[in-house]
Amino acid sequence: MVMKVFKFGGASVKDAPSFANIIRVLKLFENQQLFIVISAMGKMTNAFEKLHSAYFDNINTMGIFDEIYTYHINIARELFLDSSETVFSGLENLFDEIKSKLNTPPSKNYNFEYDRLVCYGELLSSHILSCYLNKNGFSNCVVDARSIIRTDANYREARVDWEKTPLLVKAAFDSVLESGKKIAVSQGFIGATAHNYTTTLGREGSDFTAAVVAFSLKAEDVTIWKDVPGVLNADPKQFSDTKKIDRLSYLDAIELAYYGATVIHPKTIKPLENAKIPLYVKSFLNPEGTGTVIEHFFTEKKPIPCFIFKTNQILISIQPRDFSFIAEQNISNIFQSLARYNIKANLMQNSAVSFSVCTDYDNYKTLRLIEELKKDFKVYYNTDLELVTIRHYNDSTIAKVVDGKKVLLEQKSRNTAQMILKRIKQL
Figure (cartoon, rainbow, N blue to C red):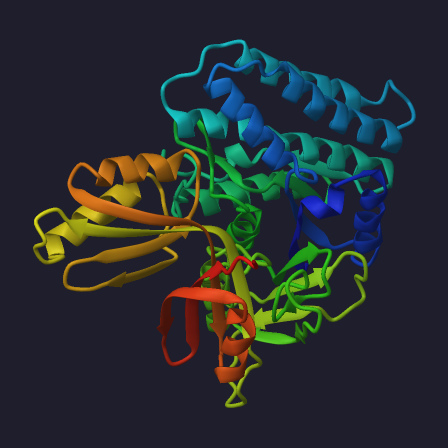
């Protein structure tokens, strides 16, 4: 029987009416075997990150906890009118677990504590979704992602164990089918070590979870259901004349994701390419639409330009204190520092006496990185920057994005142009 993997993001479960869209989608695939991966609801990952920061810094957490609790309970009350429904007892159990963690002093490991708390966004959403599907005639089983996605202990950016994970995923789904059900519901973004410590796969990692599951189960395809009609060539918040891309190669999708296209997580494509599994990006608001398909194909036709904007960037320039050259050892030390803080270099450039790197600004990690680098180097940096990447660029597309901005750094390759921009203040 055909087996498909669906991933629903936070926008698909941001409020009670949104759940009806998932039912509309599933009615198009009745009697098919489905593995559903769900993200945290709405902006709950942000809320749990805020809760974690308060917890780790020993700030009163109850106000943030109450907001998270109220948000989920209110949505559940709209979806389930009977207060005796099992959804409520399940939610209370999960919130009791969160309270218990908040009442225990944190360890000194910031990333370890992050994963222990932030994972509850997905645990809560998957519980509500599973109960709602059962209520609407879609019998299903919840599969705890921590029991099937085996990872190392690199907290917040855990790496998947590709030997053990496929075996665990297959065994779990076989168990679902043996129970007489055809739908599994699980959490994106989270996994666990061999010692059952919770890990996360990186921000927006639910797409990657869906790809891991599809690879493990040899799925026919994966569909990421979003609130957009497919992959667009630019963020509609930035451009009013965006175009939907009907078909993308794995290579172009990997490049777009790597450079920061938010429609797909960067790690998602490679497992699917290895297994030749097509990926669809479709709208849960219009599930009958064609969306975008990402698969293996080649065309000599020049693709349309694609624009990727990353805000809240920092450009760090590093120089040896003695004005010596930026030699290989210096670069090695810099990369070790970046790796130590799990900071990805979005753009790099070096000269004889300077190495510059552009990264996402993180209030916790970036400042600690700079302080570490200052021990051995002179360090200068600019904040509040924008990194613009144009895939399949031309002169007019570059002129379009730099208008009214100062270019601090620019790089071009055969197919891609990148610019670090600072907005010019109007007098």
